[in-house]
Image (cartoon, rainbow, N blue to C red; front, side, top):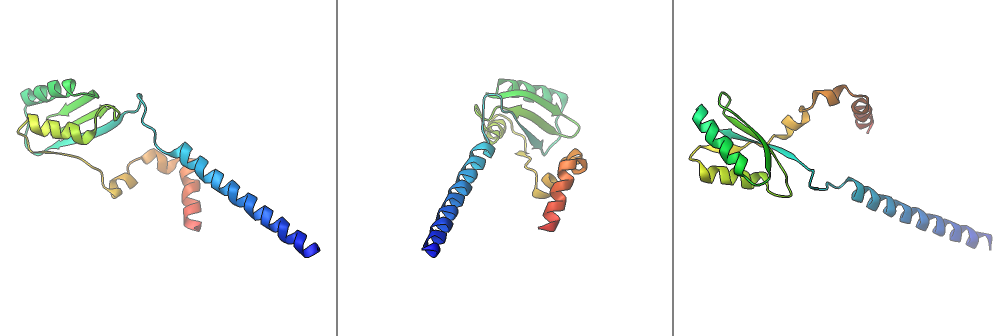
Length: 141
């Protein structure tokens, strides 16, 4: 009788633990998945592969001002880049770049950072306390 009670207890304990782990997994997924709201902004960059003048920059600025979802933009003639922020709920970065290419005869492409760029992108994070704890745990594991 005692053996049966222990088995029952272990079965209920394991079942409860399994349900709790599943609930925690679902909770983490629901909380941490990215949500696009009306306040979400994304930054993107277009690299122009040929020289641009100030007149070209003014035309590009006028185009970006008309583009749906774009709320801020910067055209740099020296480095030949166009940096802009947009609302992903209204437009996509790829669509904006495709519209840019369709309206202008520039050789241009969207800049997409590599994994190496992303790894070294935020110098503040490397010195933060949370990052140091993360590195310590990742080295142990």
